[in-house]
Length: 292
Length: 275
Image (cartoon, rainbow over the protein chains, first blue to last red):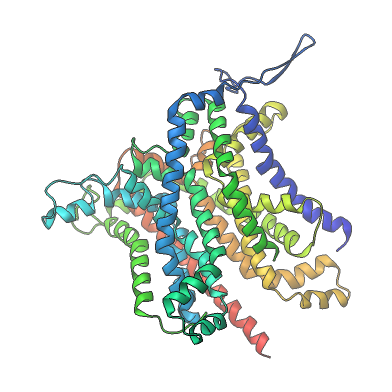
């Protein structure tokens, strides 16, 4: 390719992503050191140059505030806890599904894969909303259980942490199934045959051969579920009620209800630091896939 | 991996999984035809919620805005995503490639609240210092959607480009075709199905986004998910079930079309391979 042509093919997406993906984070970092004020924009400038005096105002008060008010620490911890157990739940349902799909013949395999993908092509918001109707006090589960006489009064399902787990596993299941499937389908059959020939029972072959070899798929799927779940807003907002504390919801409220942009920025920066390790993990897997 | 007839175990895993995935959707569709105002009590068959949906000017307006943004964002994301894939698969190493791949992979998992907040702060800072964008609305939502959709499109197209046998491209080059001609006459037709599925993926992602659009939208640019979200917050409404059913129907048709295209291109490539 000609040098100029090649350069411009690199430059266009590069500059777009630099400007609209990387630079915004720098601005969030900057504003997390500002102070809230009632004006447009609703934060103070960090650098001022008035009457030949250069003033730099770095306000670490927002971060101090995050440490001081235990609400934030609790929200970060419970977000990580909820995302972690929801990821395990998705893995327990998703791995056997991916395994079964990978073992089907080619035609069935494509149809099954399409069936896994189809729900995620319909609206995320609407799929979460569907669970409101199922889980609420006069919803399908409670009405059903009461009509057959198992319970006398509705059990609280909606607005509980359980509902958030169900919502996350439900919404993110396809993201767990797909990378594990991609990994399992490439598995070399001769390894499994060798193991069987040497007298290894199927369950032992699975544990000692299949499972370790599908590690990359498990990691990719788990990261695709875990990382976005930590910052999830829609699911805890619609299914979790007032008692479920998650950091995505806290950030949303800081921004939209309290209109405190600097504190919202500090919340975002700490969340990003928290997710740096899993994101790097995911990136290492994904860049190997992309550059292979 | 050994393939063939599914074992009973496999069948039961799949049944449980698919029941979990499809039961809520099915319930939603059934109750969209319910006569009663109560979403969970069946009172007879009726189309009344569909009628009400089509008489709701706010929903229709929001749907129109969302469709326009989704078409424009998906189209731009396919162009940028294709360029990004070519950079990653065909350009070899260059300075800053690691940074480039990180900017492609990170948006795939970035929590939406962070992306939304950071883009809003960028637009505000740019408005303050450059005077552009003057106000937030469809344009800012479009930019935000192009940015995160590009990453998804790039992943789809990259995996297709990697499978592609580059000897055909080399042959065209050896016969003296300039690079742009090789791309438009050889590469592009071969990866067209991947472009199509990338476009559809970007279209649905844009149509579906609530969180990022809420941050970067302005007055007068309420998208469909934003309208749905505020109506759901007021309480549950059977009208949303009707909307959901239409969305599910549209998505199913789109997926079948995409699948049909994929099957067809698969067949044509295997025929070429067999010769």
